[in-house]
Image (cartoon, rainbow, N blue to C red):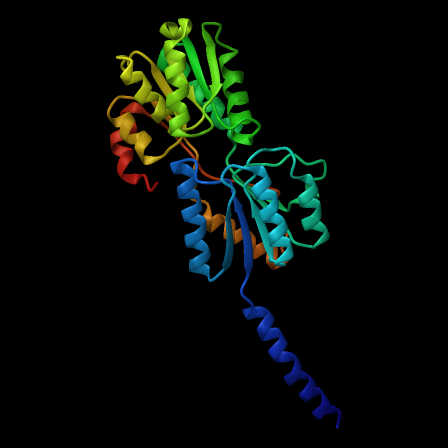
Length: 313
């Protein structure tokens, strides 16, 4: 009798275990927007990997507005997703909604950009680049290209965002060691090509514009917009004004192969596989590292033509 009861219990339990194992993972992804070729490639990588793994991905494009991201995260909480992935538009202001996710027992993974919080248990891990190191690499490249002497125009990213803050910090660390390297003009280009062009046009029309000998752009799209403005002003980009930017999009390598820019510091957007490896581990209850870095490189003008065929974004 006891043996029969145990057999019946086993039969009753087995379907429950099978259903749990076969349950499709649901992930809510609050993306920054589509402000650049880099961001488009990042979104594509994540969407394609989710589809490949059979993950139910609920995607939200914040259009570079923090309030849209906060609303999206709250929607994900209401939908009881298994994991929330957040690429914060800016660093500050996300703590309250992250606390809401924690109370709902939904783990949060920060992707590409960090959020400033007083309690780092509000997210399980961060995956992305070391933006400070990228800024250092850009600074070191510009020192090399200009022999340590330049009057620099700087195009900043979105104010308050982690890449803008950190890429500036790392760059400034390097430039501070070289007294003949000076940032003479600086303004946000909001990480977009159109704004990069607009700001560079204003720089060149200002009294100090004629003194610019180098440009540091926090991303490639702003640099590409700036190149249009430089050429329209009758100045040779990459020659009269040396240019260093960050991201590594294909169009930046094309410009570099044409001699219009001098160095690209890579920031790899193709993180889909690494991200969903983390998602799988988190859902399985495994302990994950608090930070996962992506692999990146630095490419000078003479490397552009050989590297161009390898660019996937």
